[in-house]
Length: 156
Image (cartoon, rainbow, N blue to C red):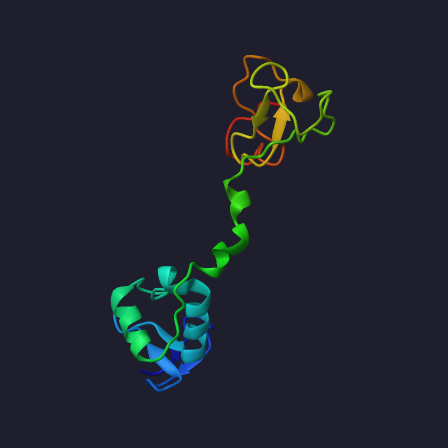
């Protein structure tokens, strides 16, 4: 094919298959350099390695194994050292300009004036009810960054 591009590095891949230029055996639309697909295989590991275009796994793995691509039997590199562990955590501090809670920004109670409300739009900011002068009946709050962005009603 003419004008093929490696879908990993986005550089020209050549006009035909060769030792250094490969095509996905399933979709036959994904072209890549041998070095690019080898790097991807090393980072993804056996459990997550698949065609980056059609996401075929079985035919793709079998063909690339036979072509000498090394695919380690391990979890992907991006899961090592709990690199994304913080994504599962909940925001847990008061971001009001002046936090009035005597125990500090990092502390909160289950209910009452020191309950920590998270922004109803982004959940990346929080405030104690009393720190933002919110009444006990207020059930949601929106941070200043989200207020006015059309993401929800502002309750400041």
